[in-house]
Amino acid sequence: MQPVSYASAGSGSGAGSAGSGSGAAAVGHNAALLGGAPATALPSNGGLQSPYESYRVDDTSYVPIGQFYAGRSVFITGGTGFMGKVLVEKLLRSCPDIRNIYLLIRPKRGQEVSARLTELLNAPLFESLRREKPKELSKVIPISGDITSEELGISESDQTLLCRNVSVVFHSAATVKFDEKLKLSVTINMLGTKRLVELCHRMMSLDALIHVSTAYCNCDRTDVSEVIYAPPYNPDDIISLINWLPEDILDQLTPRLIGKRPNTYTFTKALAEHMLLKEAGNLPVAIVRPSIVTASLNEPFAGWVDNFNGPTGLVSALAKGLFRTMMCEKNYVADMVPVDIVINLMIAAAWRTATRKSNNLLIYNCCTGQRNPIIWSEFVKYAMSSVRKHPLEGCLWYPTGDLRMNRPMNTLNCILKHFLPAHILDAVARIMGKKPFVVNVQNKIAKAVECLEYFATRQWRFKDDNVNGLLHTLSPKDREIFVFDVRNINWDKYVERYVLGFREFLFKQRPESLPASRKRMVRLYYLHQLIKVVAVLLIWRFLMSRSKRLNDLWSAFLENVLKIARLIPFL
Image (tube, rainbow, N blue to C red; front, side, top):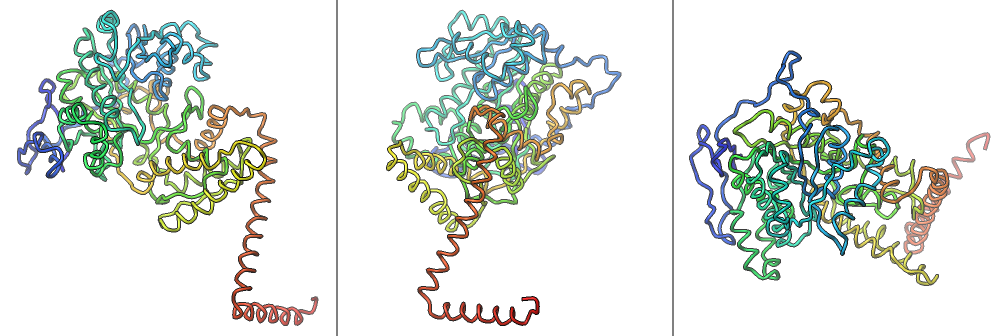
């Protein structure tokens, strides 16, 4: 399969011409959805010259990023999500002259969008802004809407407001649930993108649309370049399919539709990229593809995280003493990227898209595996050290764990180390008249592990030449303000701040409780060692009672030890 290079700005699909030695084969968009081979790749248009020139001090045309955003209004979808919050905070703090930030917010559980916005801005993430620049928060304006609705559920008056004022759009709204139903995943990740593009076409002064995808949308490939690959199906056909097929039938067909991809998330994200290319026409668009997004590196403070998704949930379970084994190739790269790195890249990508007009839709693979890799065994080692150094309150057991590629052995360890202790603890809770919960927690952990296993047992090479090229177009000052050079990450220190972050922001535990937690951790360590010794003795006693030969060998061994001991003078 050849990568797709779409160079024609106004062509819609922008297929380009075939590269040397490749025929001009068209994509089989009209092939049957449920039969035959997936569509082949669109042909490449050949090698494109790098669109980047390094920053020069004498370049008088250079516009600093902060200055670029001055007086501009920005529209953000997904602004109440993990990445969206960091984006809003960063724009307000580092682009102080920005005019307005419009956030698409869905009314939720009877709560109006204004109340949801107030709740958002009262989060710990905005603490420094509330203290130092409280007036900046008034620039955030809620737009009532819903990504799953026609015209994004935005009223006509608000659409007119956006079309008249907005010049930069960040589209980060998506369902990131790996086990999401195909119908909802298509509705949010694909139809939502299509409806946003329709709105963008009506914006009078749009200079940049940044679409947030995922590096794993092409996880059916080992090497992933910064290009759009042809999808297995026509996105419009998939949209038609979810509209006329009953959901139960759709659920049965989902495994066959997604093919080699592990879930509906990566499948619909891949289709959304191709659909964006087709629908965008001559809009100034760029795509940012982060890998596994984790806690912040530095901004607005180190270790900030607000969800248990991905590695965060598993490391949290490890810290609680509830998680000890999983299927993982320990020597494979764990391609994780801090959330503030991604956000800084998005802001810079919008600046670049607006200030350097290009006929090419540029893609940025925001990853760490090429320039500053960390393998899974290192990540687990750092995490283990940090959760023992900064233990959680109420830790149930001493944190230990192993990464395995032997499935029968992993299953046995799951039974012995996860579910058997969970049932014992829940039985004790029932006897004491308390509500059992550990088995339920283990079931949730098992589900999370199942979703992550695909990514922990495979390895990809994400090319990031565009990211590196963009970095070198920035002035030294902009590089300091909008940091996305992943070579600056010290993984050991980062993981420690990561652990402290979820301890404070997810478990709501203050640093003052650490001394007591450390004392408890010491007790758990000695109890853990005692249990291991007792377990070994019990197993040995059991084997001795069942085998006369083993008993004789043990007696002979002890007899020889005593003979040797008598030969030593001081004994």
